[in-house]
Length: 238
Image (cartoon, rainbow, N blue to C red; front, side):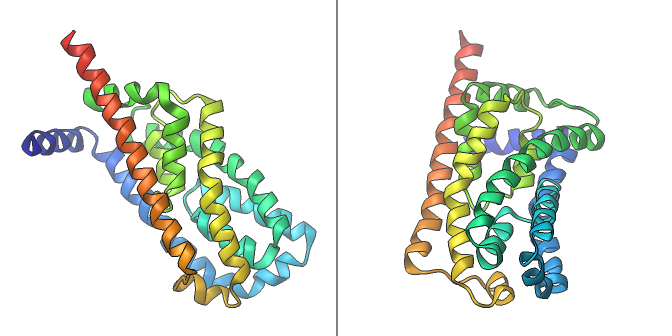
């Protein structure tokens, strides 16, 4: 069984090298860029927070940096709690769906540009993601709930599906809100933003909740993937 799975993965990797490369790129880039931005601009954040105009511009820019994969959503959540307070949480709830919609369009464009196709070339991947199509709310909910799955990487990875906008947005918002609130509250409690983002420290309850989010996400995605595989098996053995 392991040999079959490994062989199938090798075949998928050979058929879709550019798509897998995009996953690696958008998985690593947010952490690298956000660290650089923090070193350059962390002293200006209180100045931005003091101006309503600069605050709105900050969240407009944040929507763009999130969908482009330049900054993690958790990075924006911590800054919001630290500098902007509760108005920042409200503005995030506007910036997030905006970033999600732009990210979906961006994902389709960059997939077409880099891989040369808006759809999966490997038939196994195409069948698998087609089988996931009727559980899109849960798929996006479990993807967004996990604090270890980068926002932009998920957008690019799943943009080759026939995404339905309503489950995409609702799944994104419901899934992201718990971890966003957690990082937002952590930001309100820190006094040194740069030190916290470079070496995050959480309360004991937060240290339990974050792994719980990861476990729920893994279990939920495993359930959806198992159902998709069963649907494919039933279809091709009937």
